[in-house]
Image 1: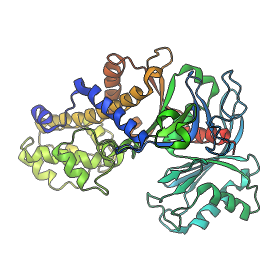
Image 2: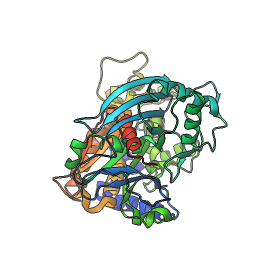
Image 3: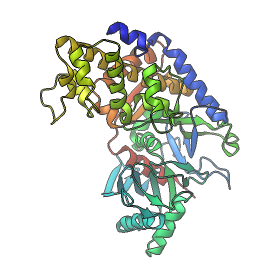
Image 4: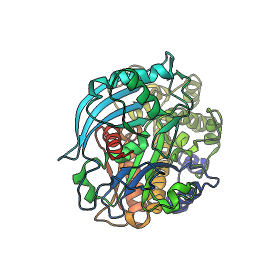
Amino acid sequence: MENFIKESGLAPDPSIMKTYADDFDNEMIKGLRGEDSSLMMLPTFISYEGASGSGDVAASAIGGSGDAAAGAIGASGDVPATSGNAIVVDAGGTNLRIALVTLGGAAPEIKYFEKYPIPGFKVSVTAEEFFGKLAEYIEPIAAESDKIGFCFSNPAEILPSRDARIIKFTKEVKVSGSGGVIIGDALRDALKARGLPHRKHIVVLNDTVATQLGAMADVSERGKYGGYIGMILGTGLNASYAEKNENIKKNKLLCDLPGATLVNIEAGGYRGFPRGKVDAQFIEATIDPGIHWLEKMTAGAYQCGMLLEWIRFAGANGHFSRTFSDRLAELRLIPVGEADRFYFRDEDRSAGGDVLSKLCADAADAEKLRLLIKAFFERISFMIATMLTGIMFRMNESAKDSLRPICISVEGSTFYNARLLRPSLENYMREYTCNQFGLHYHFVKIEDATILGSALAGLAGNR
């Protein structure tokens, strides 16, 4: 089994991590220039004044006055633009969260919080009905702030005004007539139709950027870090960071301005890691097989399916017993979390959650399967560590200060629940990212990160 893992391409070669990290950095550069790249590098038009490590942020409309940093937190620590109340709309997946957040005090405070099923989940609604429901849910706090941070976790084009144009809804959410709708305009219209205060400053951002900003919402913590990365590793994969405006060549409005802007990397699109036969076949069978290769090789939505294909491939090459292979032919899926439960020999199994144990005819089968599962998660860890290293290469000198490391704010069930993944990821980053490349970082988990980050973006708006 160990030879199979090496020969099949499942075992990564850590000695060439720098080669892949450099390539990820180069893909970022090409994406920033508007050249052909697997990374979309989408500017958020949320400006970041973090060269001094202060982590100042402003959500400023680009154009008009051309002031891309208006409303930023001052270097002296005063917070005129990011103090006060902000309404938050978090439309992620199948849940909708509405909150009222106060920033600028000793610590962020969530004063109001309600969760609802998102309108359009399974039962279709019109775009007008969708935003009408949002206005209804906002009504109890509509008069509390004229600033709204809107976290929209569906495909959308962020506009220079910090508003966004909907491309489509996903995850079984059906909203007819929503394509091309401008989110902020539609929400203001819906608030007005209900007779509610509607002259709102609305900043739209995605969940990855909100996760990054969530770590910046507590002003007292900002001096600890030399910069920030946001990462989602759950059902999907993505990352964000701040890029100097002069390097965002594809956007003429930004590249001539001073300062930096938060960029949504769309990191799951990276295509630079080698694919084995199993990877290629699995990806080819997915929707849109030409895109999101890294996401499909790492993220939670694909892990169980990809692992099953690797087990089948090993079985087809004679690495398990005949009994194992006969039982494997009947297996259609691996339940979420089953790989961890099997590897760590958990005794408390959920109903039907012991399918991998039932495959094994003897101890030899079980040990080989554990080797395969460990290698599978080792490779995921290597790819995520390499991606983060490539981002820190792009951040350059700000990642080399051991006293003020890069803050990596992470959200996602895969990162926190896959027990084989995080220890391996941290081992790779400690040995290579830190010890060999001299880059320093600190993983953080911020409770309600997307809520706090959306509030920060909303408060920094100055339309």
